[in-house]
Length: 245
Image 1 (cartoon, one colour):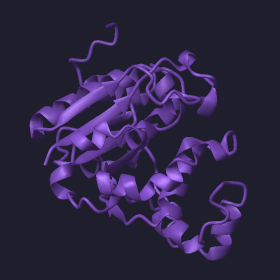
Image 2: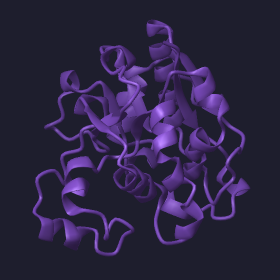
Image 3: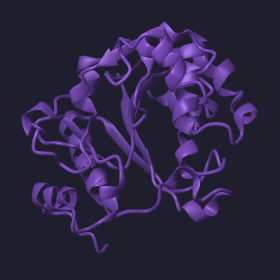
């Protein structure tokens, strides 16, 4: 199989809503790019950092939907792994493509936040989102954190009638909610991957276990502060990264 890991890092000022999602440029993206270039070289996969708009909608976080609308991606690759630019592949991480190679499933690391919640709790949590009309059990069984996920041609095609409706929700949801909605409503077969491939730990809490983390995800505000614990950890873990370049 031919596999690709893809990231998007594009100037937010080239979009109509640069403040969308509150996501702004930050230096941790250099550590992320470095870590995944090394990861792909180790296991023989391709890596690409997209720096120019293709999809061009609202904010760079929507660029990942180009993977659906531009057929070239999955004509060339069997599987594509999307990762946020605040996610870091640690040295002991195994080959994710070797572990997960079913071309019929959309995959993301298991996200336990809503798993097993009652119907009433799901309805309450998502009552003001586009997931409000989804079957609650499907939401609790499927909802994933959208910083890491894997797409194939078969899953792209299955989801496409829902993904192409993105303009219907203009301003009503963020891209992460929309992606979850498209997975849940399309009925595409969904597969949980090992949660160690997306461990959210923005502030590096004392309870965090390095050995139980393959991909570390610095979701949240600490990545914007160069004196934070996450920056110290990254500079020690990836000492060859030059932030001034």
